[in-house]
Length: 173
Image 1 (cartoon, rainbow, N blue to C red):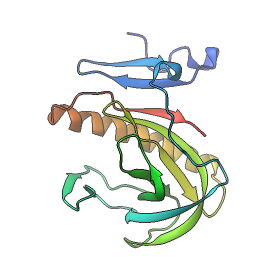
Image 2 (image 1 turned 30 degrees about the vertical axis):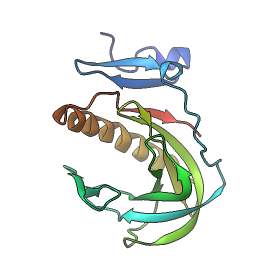
Image 3 (image 1 turned 135 degrees about the vertical axis):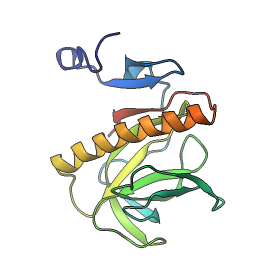
Image 4 (image 1 turned 135 degrees about the horizontal axis):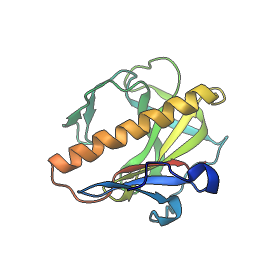
């Protein structure tokens, strides 16, 4: 198998890591299923609810039960955007940059980007929200985090015997 990201710089193709039970392959994003969700545009204001403060390790389901305990704390505030649904039927995920915010905090923030993510074969994009512009350092940090998060989620899916690709797709906006 070719090394991950091979040829990406020369062709300019966006790539995605697509997981199967046996291995991971690098494919052009155009080979991922189409994403037809109602995603906020860059610069659009979004009403965000913080459900997991920065440095949280416990991820809960919508009914409040524990879904999993992460091996490492999340370096971002994580929550959802009111009135918008993701491919899995849950509210659209939001990552809030900045200092730790208490659980239940509601803020009107600007969407500064959207990261594409497949979870069990379903689009589950992450809207990046902030009070200021996205810096190059924050952008790289988010890319590294979601690449690592995809690896963890693939392992979790394998342990639970859940089918479907789970991968980081790169920046959608």
